[in-house]
Length: 365
Ligand SMILES: *Cc1c(COP(=O)(O)O)cnc(C)c1O
Image (tube, rainbow, N blue to C red; front, side):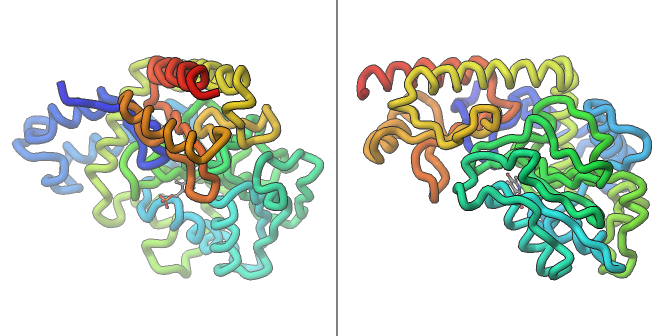
């Protein structure tokens, strides 16, 4: 058995151990080919099976309706910030953006570069340092928007939408990089969903995207070929050489998710993890000072808090590390502690952290 830590990194982040062990077993001789999956043609039938299984598992786990295509793209979440407006915001189309954190702001910034004033901010909680999400009445949508963009989980600030914005039929476009598949959800209000893989799905660089057929039909065919969603959809994400190894790991993670009972079972674990950690924070609210001000907005994936001093923050991180827990140092602008507990973090891992936190609070409060 190799030495493994309890991994609370925000991204790249821990992956389910069985998905990694499967890769270890299959590394040198993938499906009896005598090669690794990195060494075989992306047109070979053995690779094709993995590629199609990954796509089929996304559809199955989320019950994606037939009028959607699942795409496997590259360039991380950041390229989607630009690719979405490049594809949609032509021919006078406009879009609305809800700004709830750094990533949502970056998505808007790229849309501005691509489309200028056709990209509009319709709500922002930046004046409150993103400590909460906008309430429904604070979001003033434009009737002419081709899509409404938001970020489902704000990785840095620790807020997460439990109920998605109501748009009266305007397609939602969502950056789900840091909470994709944390629970089942209804795909139908969405025109476009994308998720960089390195939080809940697999290796960085890879992006899973889901696009509805009517939104795909709006997409430009006057862009460089690699930037056209239509090309990737037509070619089943095999227009050029895909990131085969990353897609293979994605397949392993999704197959593992299915084997443990799918997204309903994963949601149950995630809710229990949240109950345990927020229970501890709320029981010691003078010592563990949560960043998010509205309890319903708190994220099940990323949890930010500050201790009473920077010295205690540092001591917490160092002592946790001695106890086999890594990745707890807060985001640089916020300081304090950030606990990222994506799908691969187990209930037992969070129990270990909470026991440590109880002990640390007793010693230092
Ligand atoms: C991590 C993250 C990204 C960044 O993705 P890259 O793959 O590094 O480009 C985008 N959006 C959110 C919400 C993230 O958490």
